[in-house]
Length: 203
Image (cartoon, rainbow, N blue to C red):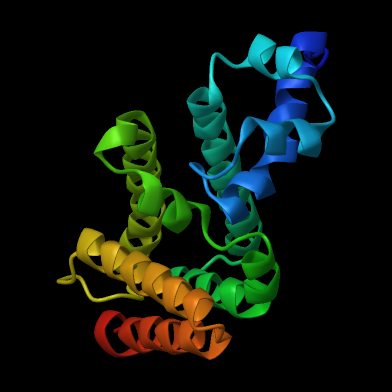
């Protein structure tokens, strides 16, 4: 039986910096988070920070991936409790209905927040976001296609189109909900996803 790999001291420090910076970047923003903010948040020195990351951009990319992976892990926990594709999609919207307050407190959706800042001057982060969105779309497509195979969803629907539509509605609802300080606007978007699944996708 293989023993779990032990992290080196450097790896532990790097993971600590990423974890401690995760909420900071997601709430204050990637560009507006300063080195002083990171030092205060982690309690480490400038030398420790730059001993583990070449610059703030490298840390920002690592933090974004950490936040995205954490979001996917939370969603997977909810989705894995269901076996049918329809139930998984209902659980997907249910997750956001139940966890919107904690999500807003953490600064909102990491994909949305990073996307706003990933302009042409931060191409590496933009590519990272594109990769994660493709992964997210793939996850939803797999659910929809499994529903088509087992007869839950209509054969003629295009899985990728609906996967992108779900993410578009979700991210738009999160954006409006945060900027208008109203979770009801997020609920409207989630309701629209449910209606789409029930009226357009389900057989």
